[in-house]
Image (cartoon, rainbow, N blue to C red; front, side, top):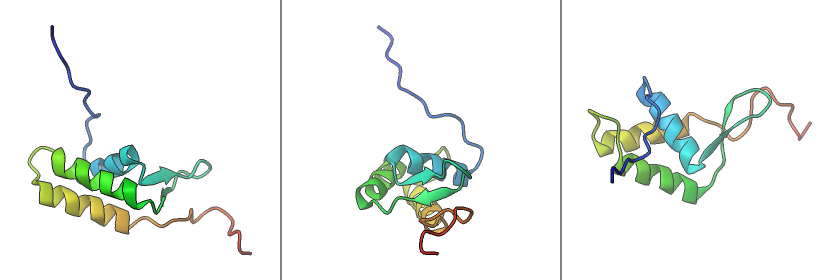
Amino acid sequence: MLMTRERRPAIRTLRGWAVSVLQEAGAIRECEEHGWMQDRADPHARERAFDIARRDPPPGTSPEEAITDVRDVLDSIGDTCPECPSEAA
């Protein structure tokens, strides 16, 4: 019997790959109204993303580079959508 492994869609950039990993792990989500990525501030989801990056880095990338790429993307994403009205106002 032929066994296949589910493959992730082809990603063209390391940033795109890192965003995909973070979404898969549940560490980030997309603002439903504006499409901006938002950090969910979930330490368990972040650790899952780092585990995925360590286990399955993109071709030609070391696990350490993959983890760095995920961390860089995560550091560039805020926890609020810049276009949504502020709830504090």
